[in-house]
Image: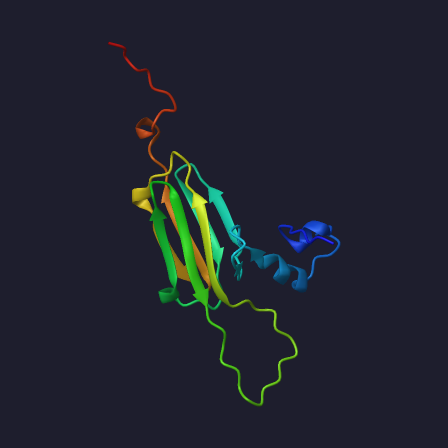
Length: 151
């Protein structure tokens, strides 16, 4: 008998028919590509674009601003990481249901060529991290091709 891995338990089920908090919790747990450890969770993320900027919104309820990090790795990798700490349990307290997720997370995004990494701004408010990246003006964008003069 052999074991095989899959990306997410919900891959096996139709998400429209079997959407539940338990499946969403399982979906948040994913196996690290190195297979050396199980990563805890990944916050839900929305990415949108306007004519002038890119906007990344990340839901991180319960996180403290000091526990979040947004950094540019290389020229075009935006990395968002942090942790959400579990509340301390009282000795006599009995939990019947626990749907919130706690622990560390890390998300990485490749910025498009027209993104200007020097203009990255972030704001964390009411459990939502918003990261804005301005686009370069069209005349300053790197062209995808360049003619090389031969000598």
